[in-house]
Image (cartoon, rainbow, N blue to C red; front, side, top):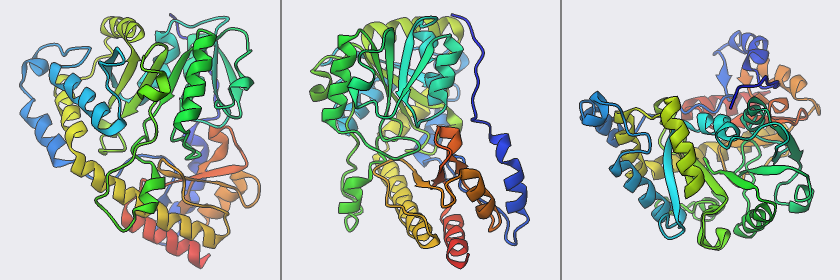
Length: 385
């Protein structure tokens, strides 16, 4: 495994001049670009971090595969929130130092390289492509990974990236679509890499149950669910993160779950490379996974912010609806060029993400990871423009 060169348009310095324009607007800049959480970390998480600050897993070297308590918490979370029985499908789990590390290192930890092909959505999170390039493998982009005929016959396919709910589009794949992807991948000997970091930000049921703020959160379908993977985890790896559900982006708390043989090999590499979550953070992660009330509260915040933002963007002239999932409003640029729209938005103090970063230069992405007050002000500016 070695690091190869990579190239990407995903460079936040490219929007610096738009930020300077937005900062000069009376009232300052409202940044709806980077999806970085702004709300408080749950009390349960902060308490767990403090209590475990001098545990054996803190003063000594932490456990690469996760403490027994963290592993239990992960399995409980999959059972209670994703309808997945980890042991029943013979899967294994390992914590990662944030989801980006898990994504970026995936092709390398799978020991892919020259001649190997990794399929991914054409419009997607840029780190899928960067991670494949770094490993020295080849990227194959398709419009829709659920259209398995678009990649099933490509020679050398070793992995398929799936992202549901999607960043940036918000699209959610059905269980039947995921099942077809898993089946087709197994037929060609490829691994399904299912990025499900926004799984609990699934808005279909939330929209239907808006009057019932305590209704159970309905997650998007999981690639490890028995009806999707046919009761076995072979050739399936799921990624999940607590960054959005618990505002723990700075804690770097995420996980991989799935095919036990693959997870075992990855854990061995991770141990030798020092890709290990700090001990106290493991305790904090376990607490976050178990704090359903805080997750529900954050879920409601994001639902409300998205709803308000969608209405304001529609009034401004964008043709948008509530996304199926995730935390972003994805819309075609009014000018059919993201950079022209970026300039117009900057003139009223609003910064979005250019769609070019995600493979679609005719689109924009607006993030709901801003405070209620910032969302309100952004909506007022859009209404007055």
